[in-house]
Image 1 (cartoon, rainbow, N blue to C red):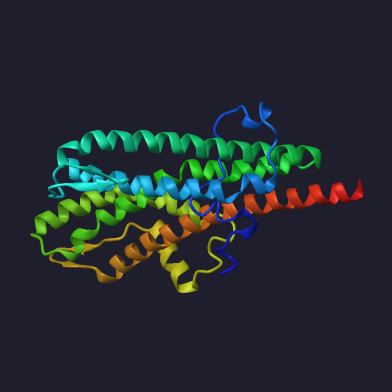
Image 2 (cartoon, rainbow, N blue to C red):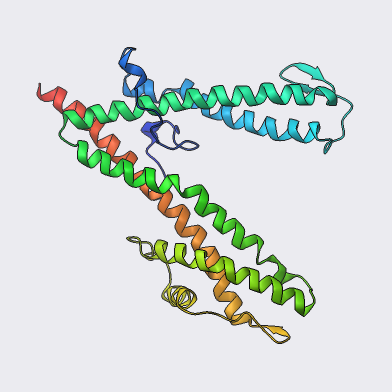
Length: 271
């Protein structure tokens, strides 16, 4: 549990949020500098939950506006609406989402510069930036690499369907084209420090087989179950390694932020 938990001093602020700096001008340059407790106060955490709620609202109202959900009327935020009003309401919700995201961006920006200042004062700015960019670079590509997992998952579902042999061959040919990029990304993940630490030896051998060989999944009129199992193991492990690395890099950076906060109090005590 400790491995996959963030320090409670952050007050759950990073459960649905990532510590990314967006923009170059810190808000507190023109405002009183916030304290640690103010940066992670309950009212700021509430904004994150509000954003999730707005996104869920958007999904439902969007379905109503498209006629996917049949209703005579519906209530939202204490007001009654007709289905034909859903498009106008949807625009209001989207505007609220944008405004809320900008507010969270400001919060992230303030936090980044707060800890950058502490790092500068404590002679730790290089280490702070190293940990920040280590996470920021991985996070920047996270959605793209997640999409690759989704793509592989969706394009292997045909294996569980009854299809003519010609259709199977065509889908396998398409899968092989997608596999090239997937294997490269998987190999990169496997090469990261400690990525294999929690994997069983038999699974590691299976993954090595997958990235190094051109496996045959279908032969004449039947599937090769052993090779398919290697493929599905690879897809599953890819997702696990991707999420683990993303979280650990985030935790690595956040834990260092806490050491900077602790270092601030030690400096104050000495002075």
